[in-house]
Amino acid sequence: NMPKDTIERARARGAGGLEGGNFEEIRYEGYGPSGVAILVDCLTDNRNRSVADVRHVFNKSGGNLGTDGSVSYMFKKVGLVNFNDSSQEDLVMEVALEAGAEDVINNDDGSIDVIVQPDIFVDLKEAMVSAGLKLSSAEITLISDQELELTLEKGEVLLKMLDLLEDLDDVQKVYTNASIRDDS
Image 1 (cartoon, rainbow, N blue to C red):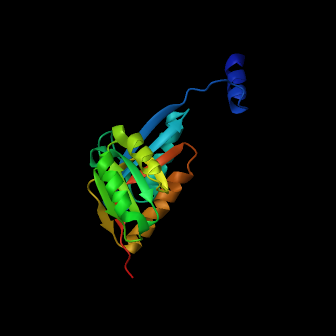
Image 2: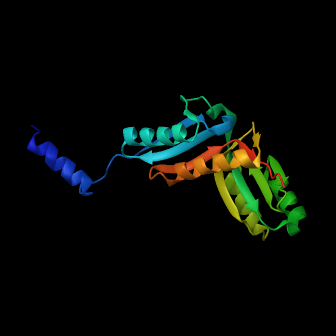
């Protein structure tokens, strides 16, 4: 009891025969295990499928999907440039400060993170390259100003959830405010 046109469209869509599907960007927000704030950026052609998949992972992992704005207020958009080699720390610091960086962070693993406002990210990146520095990574991302520290055991539960989210076809990026401490 279905019109022939509807059946043909469904068949064509399933076979990838329809041109230019409408993809949209969607951000889901919620809390994961241990109250960790999580943002999930998706690119999808089917909003209903995406929300069902993301909600399933949240529920399965002991979290819950929230409403718009429930956790996004904890994150800010920044430019992040990372260097694995800390041997040129003084040069990184000098160039970063001259280019207008907000912060330079020395990590425990010996890497250096430079945080900058998104509008001057490209200028800072070009200044770093011009100074002869080798960047490990450079991206515009979201970071949390309210980190939640987890034990290694609780961190493993969270990492399993994040893996499940990242395995979903529509998921592009996952952000969290968790910091997992090394209990050793």
